Length: 156
Image (cartoon, rainbow, N blue to C red):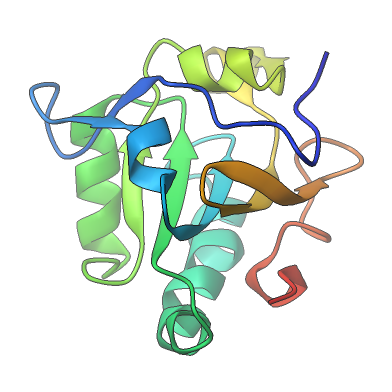
């Protein structure tokens, strides 16, 4: 069953910059207000031109309203996510975490098969997490479009 409002974020390790740098998403969200959003793939057009830049450009405003962390997750490897973060000038604004085996994506039951992008990927979504619990959830109705999961749709 897909993740829903009120669910607790599962204890799953994601990776930041290298496969050696594990970030447990449950621990990251504990005691914090976190915006977590997912994209089908790093460097893809919609993700690179609209979705991630929206969060990077509004990060200071979102953080001034009480958001502790903004996290972007994709079913990619840590090196790709690190390169994408550098390309998008996300450092200090949005943390890009790799979900290389789609463990978090599958735990949330938000996986989608996209053969042109390599098979299993994440549906496009955003969520507001407070102290480890999902408070808002916005899953794109067509799974990959850009409407409800954009930065300006998060209600603080």
